[in-house]
Every structure is written in C-alpha cells, then in structure tokens.
Length: 421
Image 1 (cartoon, rainbow, N blue to C red):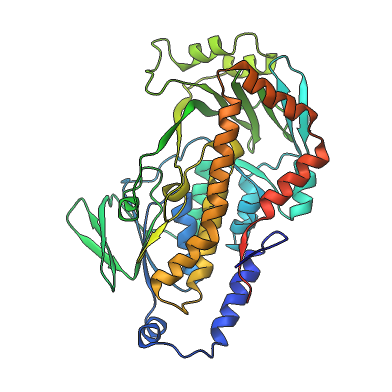
Image 2 (image 1 turned 90 degrees about the vertical axis):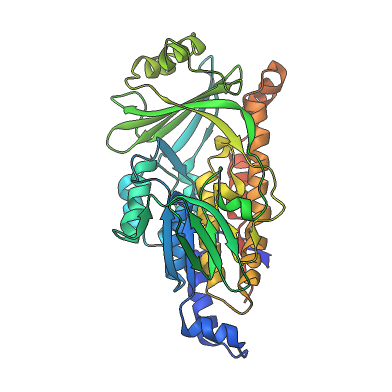
C-alpha cells in the first residue's frame, strides 16, 4: 500500500480493480469460487451518511446488500454540513455530482474574524477547489441524506430494525434485533454512529467528552452573509460560524467551552447565546436576534484510538470507528472515504473475508485517526478556558499566509490510501 501524491481518483480505482478481476490468473480456492458464483452478501447497520454511502459503494462493487436502521423513519437529519473536496470526489464517483451542485452552496472564500471584528485571515476556497479538482460545498444534512437515499432507491432500507448484538462464526456474521429476528450475511458493517452497537463485537470503548458544546440551526439569509462567503468569528474561547446555503438560507453554529451534563437554562438557548456573545460584532448579534426556533445543542464527543476496526467478518465505518470533533469539518468526508475504500477492497476477493476487511482497516485507520487527533488538538486550543492558549491560536491564524494555508490543506486532503496494482 502506498499514499498517492495527488488527489485520489476514486472512479479510476474502481475501474482498475474491475479490470484486475477480469484478468485474474491466480487460482481461486473453493471458498472464493463459491463467492464469485454466488454474490457476496453484506449487512449494513446504520443509515447515516456513512451507511448510505457504503450501501452505494458496495452495490458498485457488485455486492448484495441488506440495510438496517433502528429509527422507524428517516426525518430531518440535523442542520448543516461542510463537504471538502475529498468527500465531494467520492460522491461524484457515485454519480451524485450533478445533485450536489444543485443542493450545495460553493463559497469562494472563508473569512476568519476576531471578536473585535478584525480580519485574522482569509482562505480562498476557489483556489483550493481548482487545485484539487472538486468544490467545497455547504449544504443541509437533510438534503445530503435525501440525495443518498434517492440514489439507493425507495423501499431498500429496513427501518425500525434495532440491532441489539452481533455474533459471528467461521462462515457468517449475524445481527440480532430487538424484535427477536436474526439476519446473517457473509460480512456485517457497523455504520451505526458514535454509540455503535456493532462496535461491541470489535472492541468497544466509551466516547470521550471534548469539553465543549455547539448550538446549530438554519435561518433565512436576507442579507446576513454574502452568498459567496463563509464567515468564522473567534474570541475568548468561543466561536460563531455563519455559512451560506442555497435557497437564501444560512447554516449557523455557535460553540464554546461547556461543562458536561449542564442542563438547558430556564430562559432558553436564545437568551443564553445572547448573553454569551454580548459585545460581539453586529453580524453575530444580528444572527442571534433572528433566531426563531431554538437552536439544537450538542455536547461534543469523539473516539480515541480503537485497537482495531475489524474482527473476522465484522467491520466499522464512520463515527462508529473514528468519531471526531467538528473542528476540521472532516467527519462526513472521512466516512465517505471509508465507504469508497471498503467498496474498492470488496472488488478484489483474493483473500478471505477477514483479510479483505483487514486490508480496508490498514488503508484507512492511520489517516482517519490522525484527523481525530488533529481535530481534538484544535478543539482544545479553540475552546480553551485559559486565555494564553486560545490567544496563541489566534496569533497563529493571523500570521499564517494564504499560500502556506493552501499548501497545508492540499497536502492534508490529498493524502488518501491507494493500492499499487
């Protein structure tokens, strides 16, 4: 395995792996002959972004998929989401490029400002997009979920299927559900989020609190932010992000240090935010004044390094394997990379199922866990309660040149796993 020096072309990887299979000369074992005569059966647990994208990549690999989600229906999926070029490229490979352009807003730049309204730095998305060959989009999670569901097709998911435990034998992996039924397959994929049930079969651990909370939601734009500019305000260990969306909307996100388990104030979140961000720039104050519905509050958790992502015929993807703080905007993108890489690994069954899943783990684990560590480190600086810590962060943002920032982002986003064939 090697790291590609350039941005991975997932479509080329899939095409190349199919040619590899057609031109196979290595004799297959009886078990592998059976798998090529009879389609590989995969069960997926969880229908978030990781699970839905994995469904599509498994189907692209020629795999038969059963898909289970514990919720009785898939409703609104939260507020907004940022998809960087590495995540966008995966979705383009899955045929969703045109749909992303319809539902996503592609800002030209990100402006980072201080609590005193001083410009700390500007990040030209348009230059990064040109260098990496794909845009950076801001969209609602509900729109992205709907796009993935549309690509999968109606009535494919089994909703209200609450997986309560997982077992496996030498020949199958079995999901057991709250209603008493069992579903067996050749392999089972856990894409069931940070509080994953499937993870208990791989090597469970308790998510760790990151020390801060976010308050997020959507509102009408009506001149609040330019349609081509995302804005981040930083000050005193707090943050306010205002990101433009399609249909003249804004995705807003407030964040700050927060004691775990603190109850919601009696006066509500709008009053709380009004007090916390008193004295901030007019644009921030105006966003708070416009809050209609109460924002959604999330205490933020992540997952420290798991010893392994796979065991036998069971594997984890997305937040189940590597939940991260939202500081770097890479949670969904890393889940999409998981899905693409696993799909690729499933196109080459030159080893046993555990070998195939281990190959997936080896291709993804180091990179994803590096992202988790970096995001945690940035969170601890950004939401520090010690002024010297977050002031150091602001200074580093202020002195960083545009070219340095672009080069760092390009290297970081381009480092993805790629096989030499």
